[in-house]
Image (cartoon, rainbow, N blue to C red; front, side, top):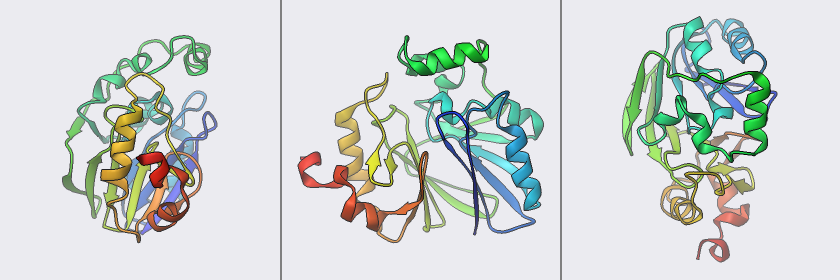
Amino acid sequence: MLIDRIVAPYFETNCWILSTGTNQECLIIDPGMAKPDLVAAIMDKISKHNLKPVAVLITHGHIDHFFSLVPLTKATPLRTYISTQDRYLLSDPLKSLMQDGPTKHLIDSFGAKDFKEPDEIIELADFQKFDIAGLTIESILAPGHTKGSLMFEINDVQLISGDVLFAGSIGRTDLPTGSASDMRKTLKERVLTLPDHLNVLPGHGPQTTIANERRNNPYLQGEFLD
């Protein structure tokens, strides 16, 4: 499997690109924030591997994970996959932000005011399986960071964890639609139940594995989860 990424210059969000190999169709996950957008960087990566993008997966409705979505879908036709619960944030991202927080001020500095959905959206349910670009994907609803956060298990080998799980940490739960109790339930019922061999591609930071996080992540231990 071909795995590449672009780290967006704002909030260092990972934009993952996955394919069965070079010269094939590919997925793009979480096209994040740059000025004017991340499209040129994404298309450079796609050209480097001679890929054909066919879909975008959005792990959750925070704008640092989808800021470049609409310009990307204008540059190349793509279907967008997101949870039913977080879809509304694509056109109203401020509802998931602290009103006087740094992200809102940054968006204002970009001059970004009118947000809208891309043309073609597929809403995903919990444990929904589908095939794209030769890859078998299962969406896993994982609320806590946002109400509609999703993880994606791909070919029973990779896990796109979004901002649910990081190497040594987890996503924050203090923003609108976040919930600490939902996050603890997600960690117990949706993360710790995953097989150890899964390689984890998080929304921020380096890759890890479920086995490594099960052993070393303090947020996956009993004293935090109980």
